[in-house]
Image (tube, rainbow, N blue to C red):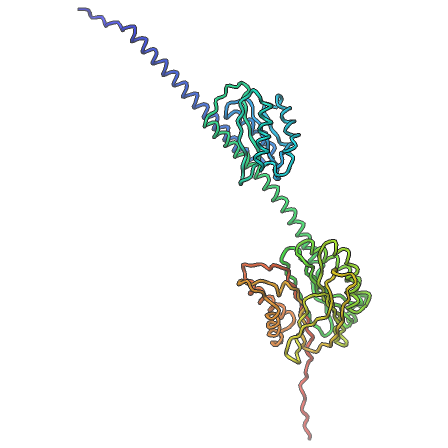
Length: 468
């Protein structure tokens, strides 16, 4: 009996060798897949880093074809982004390899349908562009997907393989769609950023306009003999169309002589809001200040102002309401004319009631040869005159109803009966208006009020005399 071990059978050796070879091949395959997976992860991470780090959209778009082609494992990729209005963004078409596809880029840049607004939202036209790309890549495998952000088409992304042996898989589809989605977000972010910058520029311009307009409105009320004044304008927007002013009819007078001289009071409202209304208000202010120097009565001043402003207002398709009055402190006489503005309210201290001051007249800018009526009254000590714009009476409350003229009359009566000073009356009226509108709501239109109160006469006590 031999002690030597039996020799292995040749078939067993061959089987072991095959198993080892299969294991090695499987291991190499796993390592290859692992390397590919790590490489793809790094590519996606790099694209994500570029998305959050690059401030230049062009640099990001240059990376897209590179990342897309490497993720899928092909040699070529094409990115055709769209502008905000849906047209092909010719300057930002990106292709890889660049040197072999310049003819395709030229065709896309001159693609007439792609230059039409709304092209990106037209599925039929997008299909025509796909066919154009396909014709150029006649012998190549092509796959494509859309760049979509917030429901809008922001472009198309293509990959192609010149070898014609590419095998498309679900993983490839997901990778390509992920790149397309990130690119769509990048384009959308850039559009939002451009819009934000545009709004910032507009806001700066509005702020400058608001500052200029605030300087045009009187920064303080003038000192007029026997009268107390208070005024405030609250624009609904940064720049508004409300206007009020106090103007001496003889500006050359100074000191006490000016205080005793005749003064013009005006309140107006340009139809509309925002910058256009503010610009027209500024123009009318200059015209009116020139007219005041003529010394004409209120009806003639409104007639001449309407004639001067007719052409400018007709071009802008806007009109102006204006109440013009002048006051003589020596006689306490008030003359006034009205171009369809809200009639001021007059509290008569002697009658303990409120009247409306009105006169016939059309809007400024409505008819070139409009005529205006002129009325005059004499004010008495304790009388209160309230000029206002329709932003006050048309203000909407929390329940949807309007502030209204009747409510304003009641509040003016209440404040005037209490003997409040002009500034206190104005403050109380605005407080009531704010309370009516509500803290969480904003005025829909500019609201302006001017309070004009004739000082009450001092009554000296009677001294009793005794006979000795």
